[in-house]
Each structure stands twice: as C-alpha cells, then as structure tokens.
Image (cartoon, rainbow, N blue to C red; front, side, top):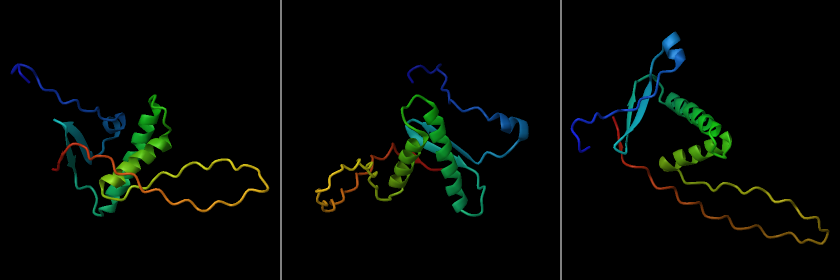
Length: 134
C-alpha cells in the first residue's frame, strides 16, 4: 500500500452462534494473505486419520454452501469437483468423469460395437499459488 496511514484489514469470519452459546475448541483456521494460504491448526487428534474425516466434513459443508448460491451446480457436482481437485493436488492420478449413458436405439439388426478404447485421464489443474505452512 502506498499510504502509510491506510489500515490493513484481515476479514475474519464470525464465530458460529453455537460456539458463543455452548463453547467449544477451534481446531483449524485458514486464510489467504498476499495470495498465500496460511493455516493454523491445533493438535486435536491422536490419530492422523481423524483429520481426513474432518476434511471430508469440511468438503461436504463447502459443497452445501456453494450449491445454495446461484452456481447452477448441485451439491453432489460441487462435492465431486472438490474431491477431484483434492486428490489431484495430493498427487493422485485424475480420473475422467464417466459420460452419461445414451439411450439405446431399438434395432433388431444392430451389430454389437467393439469396446471403445478408454480416453486418457485429463491433466490435473494447475496448482494454486504457493503455500506457506505453519
């Protein structure tokens, strides 16, 4: 910023009403600062696999939130896109989404077609901006 008098603001989310009413423990916070992802986490679980469960729940919530907006996508379509991007970012090979089957034409003399060769998987999307781990 050019003006030293300008205040830099971090736009934090509000706490859920349930946290204010019932208490609880924040286990994860993420933010984008200067195009970098910053993550703070509390060591909340003995088993690392529990973080996978938490991330899956977060993905479901994000799909629900985004599908409630006017995106033209269903919750399941959004969740599928999140899952594919997550797996690709972790290095898993990208799996092509299967095409919807076409209605079969009724023809008694139709010859069976040879099996089509599978299409190569799509390239993974470019990685987001560099990340800073904490």
